[in-house]
Length: 291
Length: 277
Image (cartoon, rainbow over all chains, first blue to last red; front, top):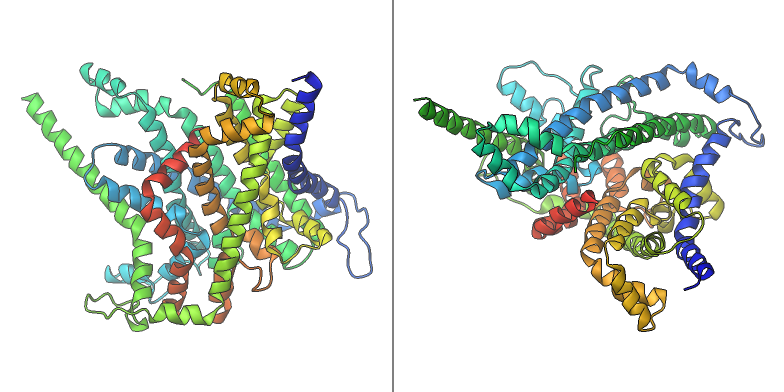
């Protein structure tokens, strides 16, 4: 094949995907930036250039700041816990444990259920008075508590649902990595007299670093991307206690129809995701890989 | 002495671990078990756990009658099929280009594709809603699917797979007189079959469960997928009749759940395969 035929083939094969990517990923990202410097068209008033007005509004908006801090707490509360649980689950179902098949099933099932559906189940779970949680705490003589209706516990209640949903998903990636590890490593360590805990800390964990990085990046993205449970369970309340950034964008954009301000908010989210991408590349540069 | 002691503590440790694993497993299955209990028993038993409670399918029948679930099912199936078919074609072609052709701008284009792994359509809802309006596609099933069809994840996964296929096979087919597209169809696609299966399972479970974008872009029964239909149903129609809501919830998740229970091994291996690359 001639060089120019190679070029032509390459471009043509790429073309259909490139058109859709440009239309629904690259263009909207650039358009978000553009619209964040303009006003929202209202009635007959067309959109005009307003400079950094939308960003000024954002800086003065307490709900924005709360959604941002909520989201950071949400990320901090869900990511380490779900990764640690995922690792624990993977080690358990990779070993010779009684009822391994059932355990694998139990851990992974939340992953295939729609978040919207499980949020409904959990909503019932948390219901005051006759929800299951209330019945359990009531049986121990603990006082009644409205888990989703109270400012102090609503975000934590959502975190529990998220950890429950995601741990089994991340477990799969650890399980895949564990199954690729040579059993001779463990045999050699056993001959040398290394304890299981020592082996885990000094051999398994370092070998799992690439997987941990992969899982971590996914977990961070999900922490900012997944708000289905907020829609079902709390709608950002009570008193904005469960307002997450993307949910706030949704409210501003599609309940108050203020697309310009929503664009400015989206820029913050894009910036956050960009930082995650840069950190990932920086880590990869420093070679977390041992393979 | 010490060896007796240590073997006993190992034994004890093992027992504790098993207990811990089972406790966690029970906690993890509890919400689903609870939903199944509520959905299959009359309303008055939804919080009374007595083994003699009568079983019933009445909740499912009432849920099915209370909202156009048949239409929602059809919409979701159409949506998942359409997205998957488009993804398979688009991603295969693009991955083939990246894996086996040399052309100017290849690395730049690849970087632009990978960008979508970070900037997913899920966060670009405001602008994509505007675009769909301009295209006249709001409130259609096509509009739900379009932003996801050129999947960076799919392109990346298939490119990695195609790269592992020996070039000799490719060249042999060329010598036989195959055009590049024939080579793709006869050599690359058949050899990548397990990866296609893995990708298909991941894609279908993602789009069956997707919610926020479909919620925004649809507002009629004719285009709503199941997830949005379920939300509309449980938020407005039913007040707080939990028996019906849990029945509808199980109904919505049933096809994926049953498929998962039947093909558990394939599911788990597919998610693994998709993650390793």
